Length: 271
Image: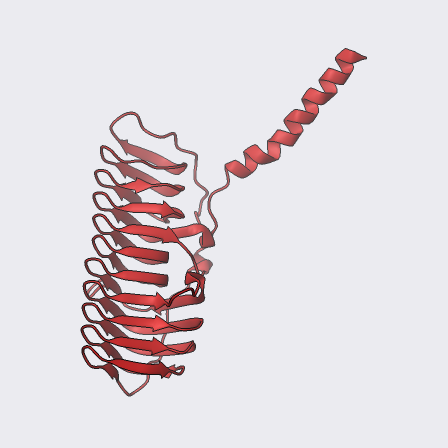
């Protein structure tokens, strides 16, 4: 009887452990990603993804020297330079110097393509312009042509649905949402050095989503040195560049995503 009881307990332990093992091998869901490229993702030297998964649906994730990804990495090919660190890895091939992480076979496809539909935006006819070093009272939801915030200026959105042809925020400028907002941009978004975009104050980054329809030239999204975003940048057909030493909290999706040297990314997806 004791031997039989021990056998039963051992079998139960195996069964109880199996779901945890199976779950541990599951790849991330779309909402788990902080950086996702359809074709490729590159982390430049000393870039950090401190929370959230990183993936390339149809290509390569590249980590330059001393880059760090705390979470899961998913790609057909992962290239790792010296002094890099990664968490769990789903891949077909990993390239770099030993010791290399062990690949778990990724699913095929990594994600359902239907989860990444193209962006279509109909902008308005009037520009929305904030002169340098000035501000504008909260702007209600609406459609615009160009949205321009001058150097050191402040544009506040009161919340809701917005559309624009393009957005440009000058150095040190801010374009922020007081409440949950969804911004559709037909062409491109550009941030100057130290510019800020997205959720204001204590507003959760999951409450701000910016869909961009632009391509590679100019980049659908471009952040410059020390720029900051709190929200999701969704540009599945374009190039997304996160500026050097910038801070980015949300999710950043593009055909190609480049995370600049020393930039820091933390998850907070609106997808």
